[in-house]
Image (cartoon, rainbow, N blue to C red; front, side):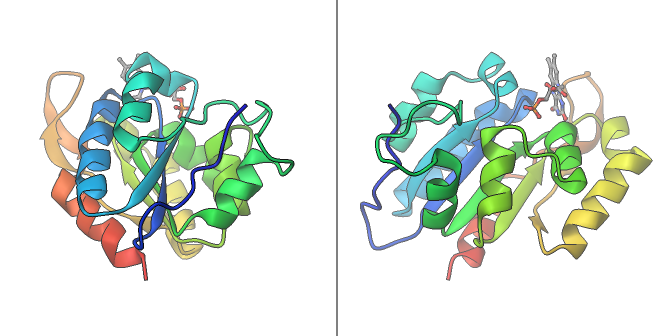
Length: 187
Ligand SMILES: Cc1cc2nc3c(=O)[nH]c(=O)nc-3n(C[C@H](O)[C@H](O)[C@H](O)COP(=O)(O)O)c2cc1C
């Protein structure tokens, strides 16, 4: 049974979505920084994200249960994705894969992150991380444009070292830049 976190401080409640990127470990730093700044966080992760970072790590850093499967019975009667969506002051997807960007831009909502994003009225901030060719791909660029037009916010990516071994645009933004962008979106 999964419990939706209770806000434990006067600051905002942030849902952090983690997807299957080599940059998933950076979510740990982002969570630690936002926790230090006083925010309450709960992590949502895709199945693929668990190849890169463990739920146990995210649970320990957020001090809340990690939601991986929206079909797990919630502790209360209401579906997980809608109760999470209602509670969130911000949904931050960091790192955001080409895949999750593509799914959101196409209206495909078949996992806990995409369902929660589509059900929320909170601002949504994405920190893309991917290979430079994946990032420059015309479909990815069109998907990002479409999401920006729909009001989704982006931070990064920047030029930097990529998992493929070369440098290029696609490296996840600096933690400080992601934290700053997140804090600016919470009113
Ligand atoms: C070692 C490795 C690193 C990867 N890194 C990235 C990445 O940084 N960005 C990305 O878009 N996809 C990356 N992928 C591919 C994604 O894991 C794949 O598209 C996956 O289906 C994404 O699922 P998700 O968006 O549901 O988490 C990587 C795959 C592997 C094997």
